[in-house]
Image 1: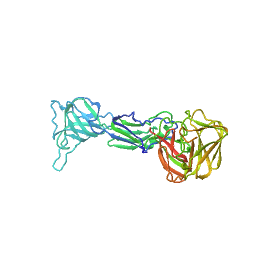
Image 2: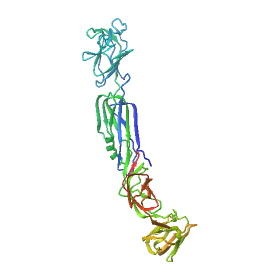
Image 3: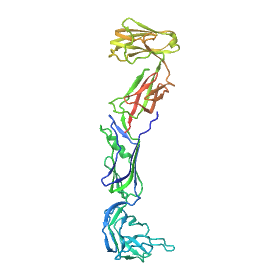
Image 4: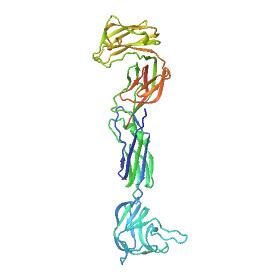
Length: 476
């Protein structure tokens, strides 16, 4: 059986991260009796949007005619300026278009020093172009994400020393802010800050949130109500980003109390699940499985056991003995270890059985309840007996009455026979997981089992199956 760990992908592309926060949820459903949770990994990826013309923040400088400069104070000095829209740019006072060229530039200054010129100042021989990084298309002046106040002038000249400011006119100036988040904070599901990145986020950020999610979910999943384990992204100044939270291997765990076990005697059975019903099926149960072999196996000649009393026949056994004879060839070469009779006690009943020279008893059998499945009453011989001829099984009820099941078309009242068997090379299937026996006691650790209300056991070997360190795992 192959089990794949659950994977949860929570993706939000092209979202705006505001100061109030953007929430990424890891939803889960409750499990009755849950004791904790496990998260193998949880990786947050924030890929800031850095391309494009930016986010329009409105008019920052009103129209002027004439003027020698445009003073721009960004609404939030922490947010870089991506561009300025300067409509109706013209010379003053004549109102002629400004033919920007290698001799005429828009010059952007910060703290009194030029930082960008559009077009840039031309190179000269071995001197490269200066004040690069800007561009203009129509009325949109694109800047290299400048922080803080800036001033725009119209300058004539080809070098810094030659630049001379000219008078000009313009319409209302609008500012476009760079689109990335500024001052990113990651808040874990318990409200504690997991990460803080100051300034504009210019490159992809990854952060491991597994410890925070593990800590939160381990406590939260024990509650009876569902939850979301919210992770909040907050930006000091709103910005856009592609956001992804990859959560893998998130399982809700329920530790199985004690060491549940069952005796397997050749009939389908299961290791019972202790505690309340979980309310939904687990993806698997991890457990250490111990099989203790009792040195015997069910012989294939054993009679079947009905699942209910559906008016099947039966021999009423009182104090007078009733005998079932097993032909010599049936058990030739075997060593008889146990014998069982199949039927329904009427009232509390004591049985006495004679087989292979042994006189065995089964006292105080409770009366049958309604019309359910019959009892399978085992009698263990003091020591294995080699079968050398026919075997007679004689039954008496020394108290009460026993209706000994007599299957139609059978060879007489039903018996089940266990013969000596070595465990080596035999197998027991528990919850769909196979346990190959290596000796009287075999333990496999970390076996993956299927089952909700118990773990089915299938084998013809007589044995005890016990689970330890068992943890049921549930998908979120």
